[in-house]
Length: 89
Image 1 (cartoon, rainbow, N blue to C red):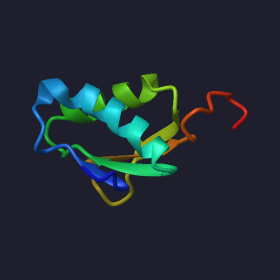
Image 2 (cartoon, rainbow, N blue to C red):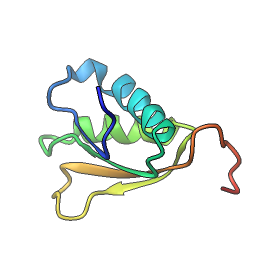
Image 3 (tube, one colour):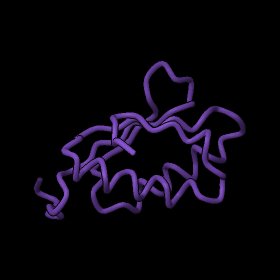
């Protein structure tokens, strides 16, 4: 599957979201992407919380925020290049 700057989580089972996000961020960093948009939907906010928890724990994520204009339905994450773990990046 090609890695693009946006991942829509709707096709995935809720129980798989955290692992899908972690694997996607790793693959996106390896593909040279520095910012990604993850669409989780608005709903009750559970998936948003799961996505942001996964991003918070991922060593390649330098920052994340709610995507502008998505009304809390997507999160944008900034990622460092794969292989660089120094916080000075």
